[in-house]
Image 1 (spheres, rainbow, N blue to C red):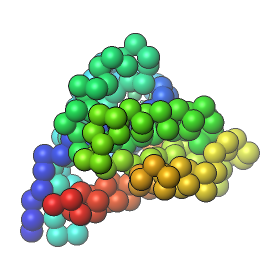
Image 2: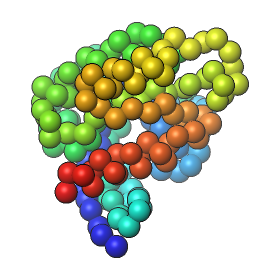
Image 3: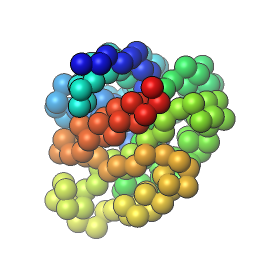
Image 4: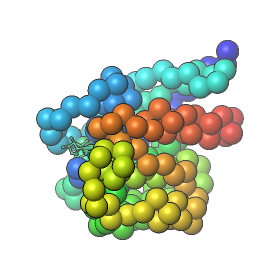
Length: 176
Ligand code: GDP
Ligand code: MG
């Protein structure tokens, strides 16, 4: 068994795309329907096992509000991974994801692993129809262009949350 860590993972993206819900689902395996606007910045620690390696992760949640923007450079400075989340039913949040990725690249260059995450894939997975504004292909293409990992998740359905962190762990292994 190999132990790797401490890796800092920062979660970025517009408000209400599901950053806190993804972290909560991964940490505690549940989905909290009470809306909780994140206040400022703080982190949670979690050890995860992937293949024969354990990873010590620090998950840094943040708010996407403009008023926190000035905090972002110091927040991403020593990050190993940036998880950029958008809401597949909110095209603007997908457009803004490119901006978040640019901000991270400007600060961290290629020293950071970026994961682009399309959350709330309500069509099919959550059983609601026709609210999807961003296709899986659009997400995948943007990620490819910007050198990011890509996955769609549903924090509500607990779908693809573990696979998201497994993808990240594999990429971290590749950097060792
Ligand atoms: P944040 O501002 O990015 O941290 O977003 P939150 O995690 O607070 O989520 C914003 C809202 O979206 C909340 O009402 C959540 O319950 C809801 N939400 C989060 N993830 C999902 C999801 O996968 N599917 C659906 N349908 N709603 C979600
Ligand atoms: Mg939040």
